[in-house]
Length: 433
Image (cartoon, rainbow, N blue to C red):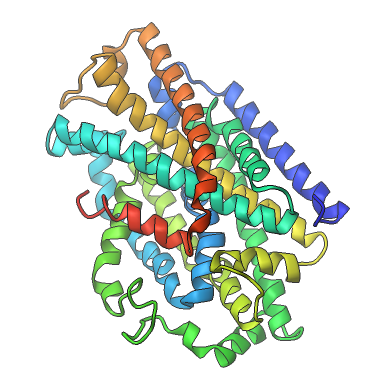
């Protein structure tokens, strides 16, 4: 870690070792004999695990790197995704979760089969797996490795492999329970580390005047970056089309993401009760309100400070490299690794869940669904050996998906704004769902 001090290096190594040990310990001590245990954490997650895991699964390199990059180019307008998400989470808690939990849904393709038929379930299950692997996993690995390369100074492939191993250590063996419980630890780290980076760069903008003075300087020196509703004359209007953001398509993206996206909603479906699930989801909404300070403001600060970067997605790593001090740089990098690792683990687990329960079980094991399918009576259709087979398929598919992501991730290097890439390809499926 040539670009880090010994103290920063020690902090990062200690964090990685700590999380791998915790993840492996949870994996080996968790009950995972059945598909319900592995894919839905035995439906026993408490509200605090749901809330923390929702944020940890959501906040990743997409936000730290991608949204900071969009903040550098567009400004605070990109924070509409975060602020609207807070409202969307309340809607999901109030209106979506009661339906899902009453119907005892365990995957979104299963819900769509109940709503339509098995053809819809199978078709969208294939599409979701491809989307998660080829878009989400690869983009998070690429963006995360991009940051590490710039901050630490190691080859990109080493960073990608390291992030993949880190994520796999608690996602492949332990299933959803290991992912969700490690998320709770990681969400604390990513928020604190993100606040450290924001505080230091804003302090630099204000010449030591602190956060509020720094924000004031940003508004004074780059007022155009604080337009929440873009004018048609703005070159980024095509990405955030003015008032249409508030009354149009972004609601589709948000309701899809928070209400029907498997790697997000799976936490709420694995909760011990509807009430706990709703409280956990609402707590995540509160955290979303403060996230623009962490994931957008550093990008605007980089613009004001005249960052010497070749593409917008380099804005956040530039901030950490130039304005976060010794010791704190290790904390900020650990937070970034926590965000990346938790998101990859979540996406991998959910891709494996859909592949195993919505594709492998009905198409290979020939165990077809009925209207009475629930996580509890699923076991009545499967023998103990079939249950073990399904869990094994989940583990192996998790591993394969991570490897595929590692292979494809370096190919994303020609993207200008990776966050917009993710939204664009997700948009091919979200309106229909």
